[in-house]
Length: 625
Image (cartoon, rainbow, N blue to C red; front, side, top):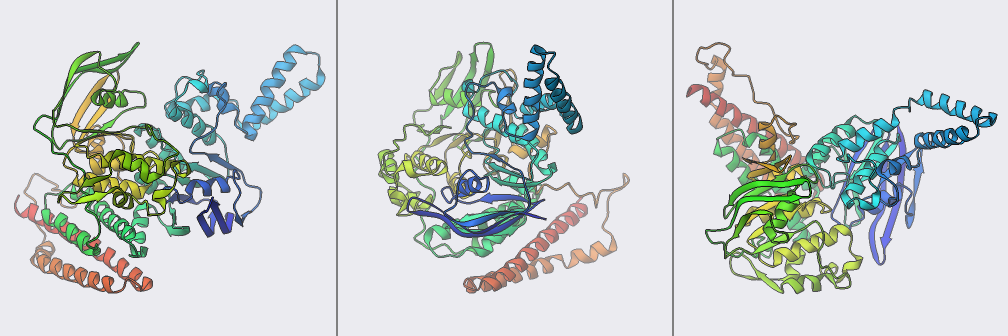
């Protein structure tokens, strides 16, 4: 049943049109993810739907009397309230009822003979009974704990921005509604809290509309995707993985920036398709085949910049941590930690909020000193630190002036000079956006600008503190592509499971009190070893089809033997078919209908090819056992 319809919606910001002619409906059971480059109007769209802002044109129709709850990207809270008081201040019928009961009870205690108060108190008691609200306070405390807030009597003014966001998130989750609107709900949550929120939203009744950059989160929770792109809203059925595939077919190769973004979608699609399976096999042919598909799908023109830029060579000695210890009052953040970072280390740092992750980066960056232990930085190390705050950003500067303050030019791997303007185009700032004042940029655009300035300064060791917060998915793919080619060392604190899987080869996991576990592998490898919930929506269980039932040596059946005889021929045939489809797609870029059909044929054929390669590998494993 439809609960909301949008007709010809338009919103501008100054002279910039964020979006126009936006049309869609939301069903009572829809779970929708909204994605798009920072500055395209995602948060503005959510504010309009939540009734916090007005469109310039268009209509919003509610079917019946529906309740909408909204979590802003930066919620406004009462700084004088305690955590528990703030949650109780939420304007919902349930919490209003409980507040009415508490105030009536207090008044009745002072005026015990007032019969009107007694009647009102009795009526309130009956309503609370009917709605089962007596355990509401304990429910609030449970949800706050799940979100990493365990001190309920702290005042809001003493909390960090991330803690305030979690308090606000608890408020909306406790409020029954027909449509829940969330703007970046996973920002400032640790991995355990994100897993919990994921399960909560999947099982929650009612419609959901959210903006998030967390691709695993999108993949697991949503079944419909809205994309805001150049002022137009595109609607896709399916989760993020399905969106990636359909987006790749839709994207038009019109400008250098669009061509670069298209290539990133293609690369990501190939990685996602092979991800879980490729990690479970030793067969290089499968990975090579995907590389061929990836490289053949899009022809990038020669004027596209090489993203491998701004690297200063590292010597043999990078960073050595020797028995590092850091305490804050009675809290132990790091306890006698030692590690030797190599020249191409890719380290993901995980743990609960407040466990000491940022403290480790600050020690390496020289911002704070350890209480005990030594840190040795190699002579050739040039640090680039992308912190959680946009440091020293003069909002009066134009975007390109801010980048040029850091560096006018940098060089790519071929020694060619790349200007600040060229790098800004690569990071999705077109010629017009480069001359906009920073004060007029969205929060996400400022984060993207801050990241670009750090990369322009040619670091060879990158410290990234929650780099995915407030960055859109397109920018994250650009960063991931950059890190693929980066020859230096990377340490990243992140709650983004996809990003950790995509980038990291080693995990530092902060345990209490101050103990750090180190393990080779990415985030999925880490949680698999420690028996936690798998993160990848593409994860598959190892096949048991050919598992021997007895101690005897497994054998191929007659049917499998016949299939094995022709399997190489079958693989060659499918690869030739894929080559033919790729050729036809290259010639049909202006025919979207035909391109969509070819893309679907290609996806099915690639899936069949993967299955056939897996069968061949399994057959050969049995024959060689």
